Length: 147
Image 1 (cartoon, rainbow, N blue to C red):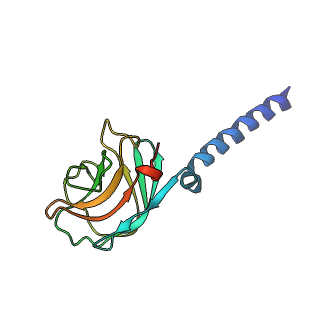
Image 2: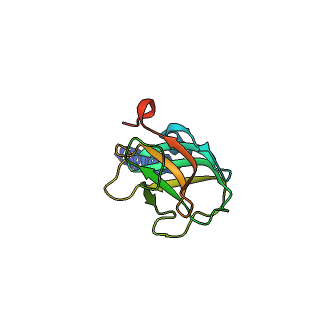
Image 3: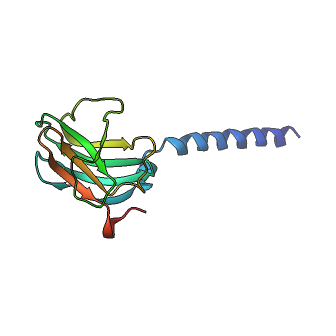
């Protein structure tokens, strides 16, 4: 009986260790991402790949932006149009009202505003409010529709 209890305790300990380790392995997180496409650069060295993490989260991999525009933000649109000033501004970092800083090949996780999911959006853009200029985008409608 002593060995049976010891075996049970050892099994439980090993199971707990496995569970903890399996939740901290970062390469598994990247495997769950679904690629949407490459940002089409129009200005200010915007570039990178855009992925879906879940219905409320976009992930930019290797995101670049020179940071020189005075009023650049992440924007999403809900109509089948090209990116424009009628899109929805996304605060980045969350809660910030500051324009985007310089990015150099970084991973950026973008949470959509409350009440908005990836089913609703048709485009993503790096947009300059002051000059109403699109610096780079990915269109999701037509053949690239997310859901």
